[in-house]
Image (cartoon, rainbow, N blue to C red; front, top):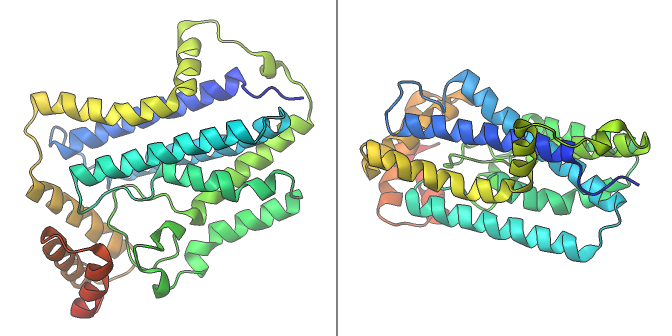
Length: 296
């Protein structure tokens, strides 16, 4: 039977959280104008961020398999799920306080919580079904998108034809495919039987540090951005609300044009969103109103 906690898996998770801290530090430097690179648009940084997200979600799948094979009961699973869901709520509230016009309503933690539920049937599903589900999830954003999903309540699926106003969106389509891929990998490793890396223990400070970071990755995720932003506020001008809004509009327009929409339509819709959200209007009312006004 595979052990529930593998130091090698913890080390991989630790490397992922270190990479995330590096990315967010670069993102913060860009936000405060301390570097000229726009991290949200630079292809290298965008690929780096997506790789980090994929690594975390793949490790979620591996972890679900290890927990199942170690005989962990419902109690530990529900406690972990509740902890992650609570942390996701904290992230949403914190990002809304920082920038209510573009907050994180379905980021990596939200996705992990939802995936921890949706992926359960695949822990014992045949591999062909895993592969089919992964193919559907990966193809969904290209084949299944529809304007009916262009509302706040459906953006988490990843099937909208509009670009949601959020700096960090990790929707079910296609990202659940990475969790299922992790499940397939975990099941294959367990089926192969005990391997030397099951018993691997870090010898040096780097390995021990990565294992420790992996075991405390949720706490690190929650505290690293407030600490980084707080430190930068001591040495750099604080971004103004107008500056944040301009930054969001630039990001939105770029993503919108990437969906083959005319720049004028993207700019008009973004300006309408900014104008109405700044007055405190609710997104559910603003989105359809701006679509009607701008023909977006």
